[in-house]
Length: 219
Image (cartoon, rainbow, N blue to C red; front, side, top):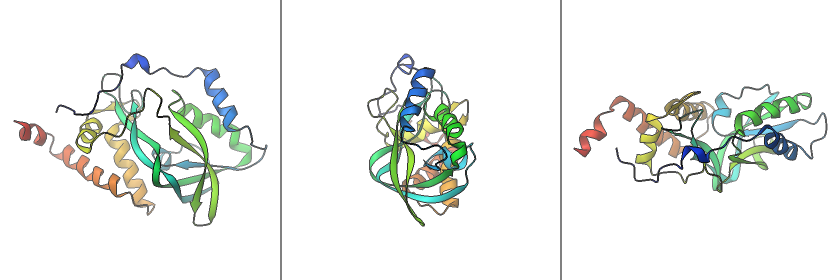
């Protein structure tokens, strides 16, 4: 299929952060943290179903002013330099339903260091403390907002292009298809409605079951 959306920038524009850059970003994020204080992390993608850290509480949460978007090229975890995939980022406007995880104060430094290694390897996000609404009241949580000025950012492609990109990309963590569909399944299991993601997932599964249909339509 010939994609109508612009191709990703050259692979050499995607540079991994140095350890010094990563640690400086983490230090900035925790500059107001008091030792022993519990902190929250907002998950809207794979953090929901694969947090990889210990937490003492979990709640459904709503974040106003942002929406979940497949707007970040992935050349390692869910794609390759030659065939990049797409992963979720938070973009401004709208509302994002997700989960918040409470990290015990004694585990904050260790947990946030691990999360920074996972999420901030290329500095593609702007770590932000944002107010999230939960059934038990509002809390401040760390959320990873996409940096629109970064080389890995892309305005979410049209749905036809999304389907093709997602179905063909595969990285060190597995397929882009599994990443997107598992997020949709996990949101549904938590009682969280994301109609756009649900519709996209249906199209992805149809595309997986009928891989030759698009080619036949174009002939």
